[in-house]
Length: 125
Image 1 (cartoon, helix red, strand yellow):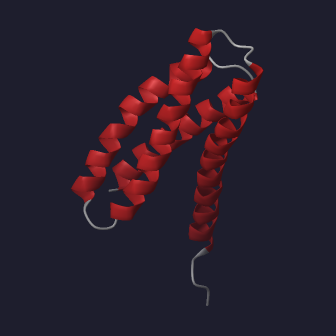
Image 2 (image 1 turned 135 degrees about the vertical axis):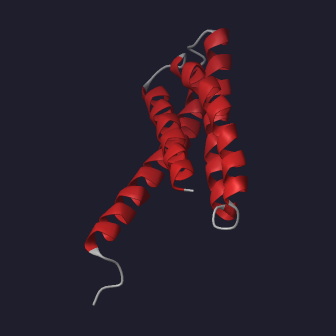
Image 3 (image 1 turned 120 degrees about the vertical axis):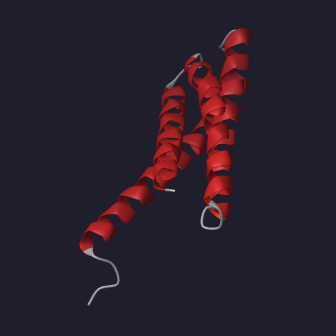
């Protein structure tokens, strides 16, 4: 007798990988943002846009973590948290893409992944 049926275990592993990938992208973005600041190769408007995008993706990640704290308690509260994801995504997506290098693609992928997971969690709540 197993604790979880096999399809539930597969879904848990997929969920874990998606969550780790999203947070890896945010960490990668912060790490390489520091390197871009020291190089100074980007024009000022692109540095500002990339920084705003990085902060917006970080807000998405924080909202994701905070939503899990309250998720089991109140579905209405989870829906309210979810409404904050979309403005952060709409700000993050274009701002992240004005950056340079692989970090922009990691951040963009993390932003899309976080908003997609949040959307599906809202459907299940």
